[in-house]
Image (cartoon, rainbow, N blue to C red; front, side, top):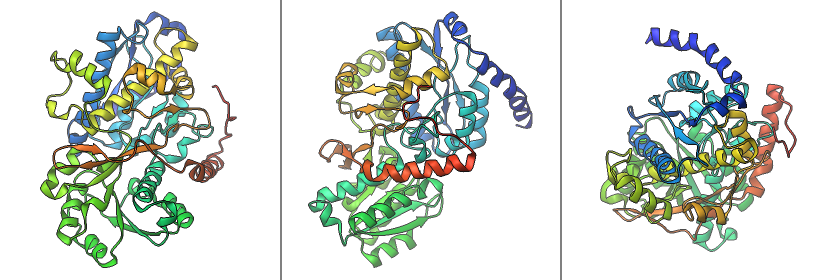
Length: 447
């Protein structure tokens, strides 16, 4: 391991030089687009990672084999195992950022909240955009300060706001939120604490009581937390877990008598892997997600026919096809491919480098027409990114577990209160810029 680290550190300056040396002329010579993948197929979180890579790789294979690539430029990839470790994630980034076989890296997927934060400043220096769909630094929505970080589609702040808005729908409107008790049971980590600021603002705006209850990692014993919930009797519980914490929470809630159909899990507490271990007591549990489960989407039907049924799927367990995490992978792959396609319109049909990929992301538009062409209606929310807005969506769907599968129970996409949240997000981004000595770009920045 020490030798590996020495080699990785020795290679880092050379890789950085290679990245900076990649020019459009060199990219023109390459025939395929390199797309490295950071994976965690082993370790504590492998059960969530494996179906995610399945979705990404299956969509990439579909693009290559059915569509002939992105305007004829085929994708190729390799994997670097991180075990969801920050140190290994950074080592993998340094190893692959220089590209491969003459092709630069257009976009980088950190696949881990701590890893993404460790790479925030590196990505700017290397001009390599990071996509952090459903995780990452919320202030990175402001691309004027964070030009190479893209919290595409659904930030943690949007997650919190969508949950509150769904509760408002259930009780008869936002005016009925006043006086309600909403308890957040959260993973006691920077990830888990990410929704505290927006919930404080939302509670002040709508008049509900905001109760915060931490759970130490990994969350194997939550008897004290749910005993407190039994005592304070909240109307709703917002569960922001990860890994084993979620099924333990569901089972402990059932033991204490709290109704699971009044528990709404966050993005990473809303997969099949989260509810199946809870058994029968998980029936009725809710979760908000930008990655709706199910196979009844046109693009999923095409992937099944052209990839899965022909034995070409990356999945070993086909039960994961159409799961929340598999669909997460498909969605992330669609966003990446469409950003590259957008960049090709400006820079030419060839492999795209990181700086060009950043431009493609900032000019990405996935409207209803394009989503229908892809076959992703209902699977991907409409998106429009810009230098000022690296999220572009801000909506989620609420799912409910029926004991066997997830069903959408919200009325379409539940939008967050972005008009309320964005001023505070921009304020925090400005504070970060001041701390780091960053001069923000203009709203219409194109570089």
